[in-house]
Every structure is written in structure tokens, then in C-alpha cells.
Image (cartoon, rainbow, N blue to C red; front, side):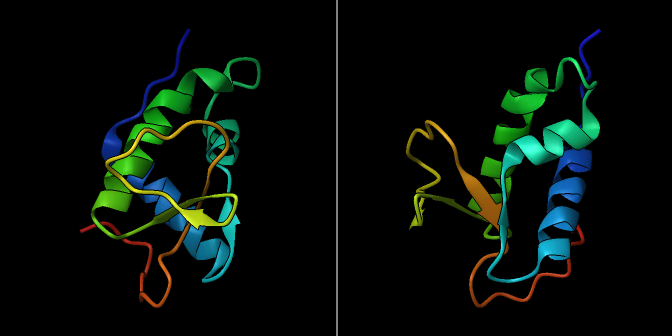
Amino acid sequence: MEATFSAQRLHREMLALASERGHGKTFCPSELARRLGPPDDWRALMPQIRQAARELVDEGRLAATQRGQTLDVDETWRGAIRLGLPPGGENSGQTR
């Protein structure tokens, strides 16, 4: 059975993980999928998690990088990405 989560829950979980890491540290979206998803099917969550990440990046609440370069929210994201708190921002990890 495929797990699904609301965008709000994914936002909360991502912001919490980013806050746990702190400024200057990042995490791979698959870490969240492994935390939330079934052990044998966490990959099925990746499209939902990437969409939720894109929403948070668009709001300026997370930063997405690839090979150290900031990703543009309007561009296609391919391959491994990293997520973290935006540089210089104060983010408590709470949703609005």
C-alpha cells in the first residue's frame, strides 16, 4: 500500500529536519522518505516530497542545492539534491 501525506505534514517534517540540522547543514530528501515511508517502498514518496520541497523553496523557507549550487524553483530538478535552511534566514521550523 502506497503511503501518502498531506503537503502540510511534509512541510512540517521537512522544516523540522532542516532545523535539527541547523544553518549551513543540509539533508537529502530521501532521508525524509525513509523516515516516513514503509521500509520497502519509501521511494514511492519521493515525488510528493520533492513537490513539497519545491513549495517551501518557492516560499523562501528552504534552500535547494545540487553540487553546491542553488537550484532555481522554476527550473527542472534532476538528480540528487540537498535541502536546508536558507542562508542568513531565521527559520524556526514552524509552518505559517
